[in-house]
Image (tube, rainbow, N blue to C red; front, side, top):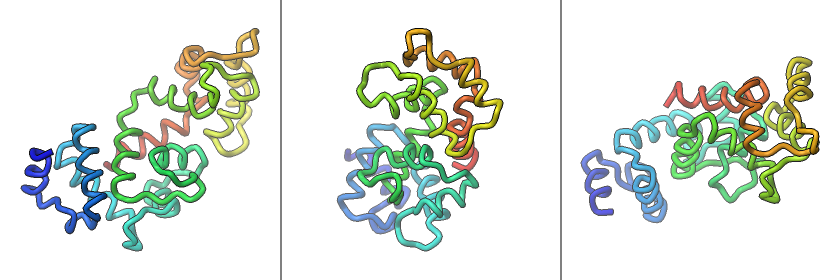
Length: 196
């Protein structure tokens, strides 16, 4: 951890500059070590965080987040951004460390990993499968609005197997064939990539 602290000190990234408590600064150091984020990346994320935190409260509210990224405020997007938080997604409030972790996680997912993440939000029993209704609920959750006839047709076409279940691998394959099934998840990722 000494190397991380020395590198951060060169960039004047200390608890006072970042407006973090000692405990939060230690968490940030751990995050840097786990993710291999470079200090320059941390600086960009800190600057982004400060742009979003328009009220200067030290946390980003859902309103600030979705306004800044011009994204739809959906339960899926809230869940994706608060996965590291102990607050329910309805109370979305990210401090700097949570924001760094959320950005790192969500932005570094490749296509299949993001699809696995989405799948596991609904595979609550860790069975590796979803039932027909769970599959439809998943798609509706990602969209958070009535599905268009096109998306509804894709749900019917690419839905569950005759067994009544869809496995994670089948889900990934179907979403690769019909990316529109979970398009909002990738739109959020693209919006984050473009600004950070």
